[in-house]
Amino acid sequence: MSVLIIGIAGGTGSGKTTVVNKIIERLAEKDVTIMSQDAYYRDNSDLPLEERQKINFDHPDALEFELLAENIRKLKKGEAVQQPIYSYLTCTRAEETTTIVPRKAIIVEGILCLWPKELRRLMDIKIFVDCEADVRLSRVIQRDMVERGRDVQTVLKRYEDTVRPSHLQFIEPTKRYADIIVPEGGNNTVAIDIITQYIEKHLNDHP
Image 1 (cartoon, rainbow, N blue to C red):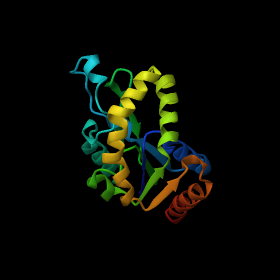
Image 2 (cartoon, helix red, strand yellow):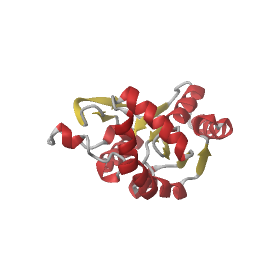
Image 3 (cartoon, rainbow, N blue to C red):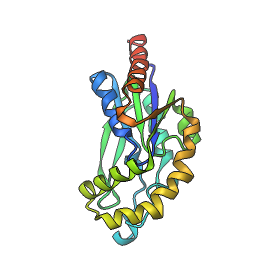
């Protein structure tokens, strides 16, 4: 089986998930699976909760890229893998895992998925979702308050201390590796059309 690997990166709140969801909607989930970089955050259960909550989740060291790369290699060989389940509330991995079965197209989505060279080498097409910083911040505030139980002051402090510096140092520079840059995220229907057609062509060429 010929497996197409698509990497989709971009800053926190840039609209990556919306882009991925719109692609999946158009493909009706046929022979396409999604792997989230967020599932591969390192387990920090050995640290007190207070220490875990101080971790910079926008730094490459917070992620176990080796395991993600290994799982992608196995999927390309036609082998199923066990993807970790990570909780942002406890900053630990669950004992359970999610079974990911090999499909003809795999979308790897995450803020830093274009950072490691070993991951980029596994990707057939690399995409960077671009978005203005103020729009990203607004989305981060909304998401972190609703999904992660944080107040506005906590979100803003985290943004200033870790999110913004890490974006400038680690995430923004990976734009140069992208084959396609998608401004305006999920609102860019032209870019989403092009990416979807690219994936569909692969699926049709490898029935």
